[in-house]
Amino acid sequence: SKAPLRVAVTGAAGQIGYSLLFRIASGEMLGKDQPVILQLLDLPQAQQAVKGVIMELDDCAFPLLAGAFTTDDPAVAFKDADVCLLVGARPRSKGMERADLLTANGAIFTVQGKAIAENAKEDVKVLVVGNPCNTNAYIARAAAIKVGRTNPANYHGMLRLDHNRALTQLAQKTGRPVSSLKQLVVWGNHSPSMYADYRFVTSNGDSVKALINDPVWNNDVFLPTVGKRGAAIIEARGLSSAASAANAAIDHIRDWVLGSDEWVTLGVPSDGSYGIPEGIVFGFPCKCSGGKYEIIQGLEIDEYSRGKINLTLKELEDERAAVASML
Ligand code: NAX
View 1: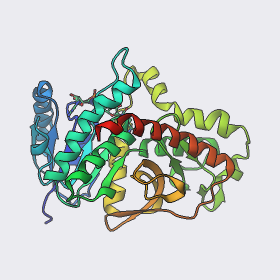
View 2: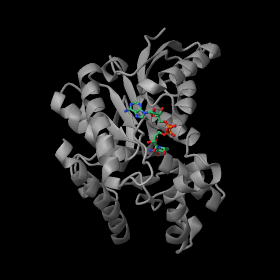
View 3: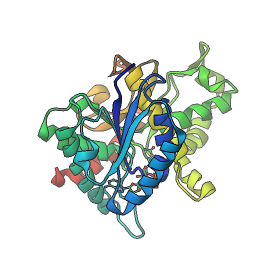
């Protein structure tokens, strides 16, 4: 049987953690034949709660769960990690300005990026879920690059929830099964500025744009619905998206590690593709195989799309400027 892989999860006591950990332990992320060890990180005051979650993990008797521990020390949590899911972040409190949120998270993700680069496996795969996830990933990557050792291409932000949200909107609009929809991409920042782009989407060979054939739906319904979905969930549930966010994190890592023939949206550090400045963590269409990903090249960017991409890029450039002095 396979040797266990080590999966570090931060913010393990939180609501996303509670949806995520059980699915990782049951093999849904890394494969039904792949044992895992869960290395959980949370703040000192949350250690007791994480211990309770580990008791429940124990009580599932998952055949693939080869171990689990909790710590408040990033060096311990990231030791020899193959995959790091950075879920814990500083939430925006009442009256907190956006700049304060960015710097509070900057402090967390510089520490964690450095600790990953010093302690994890050299080919570690890192996915930042905690918001603002693109810029947090950018910060962790910058801190990791200073240390060296790990692969700078492997610091990602999570756009997959936006991708999945958009897929279901398209399925409901066309009446086609979600599994039939291929070639969706969500460009940019995980924020309402994201650009969910269905110009290339097909369903069993049919163009979804042609099937929808409604010139105002994109601007008036689709983009606002996907862009403001997080707020709509909070409004309905009284709590932010958790199970769907955990599901998206599992999808992102599973496709990256185990491969995907279809396009997937990954938030990855730009290599300059599509004119996005190098290093900005941006939603791109990607293909994955052999544990590696590549950005799909050569897609036509029309004037409307360029405008949308520039807006979401501008937001990320502003965030980058706000944290520049910390890096
Ligand atoms: P919770 O508040 O339920 O849990 C967060 C946990 O993180 C807490 O247990 C807290 O103690 C811990 N934590 C805080 N700072 C930490 C640190 N420095 N090191 C380790 N642990 C730390 O939040 P939850 O609902 O689980 O959401 C977690 C994050 O995901 C938030 O930042 C949220 O904004 C973000 N989201 C990102 C999404 C995405 O698509 N990228 C969607 C869902 C979600 O909004």
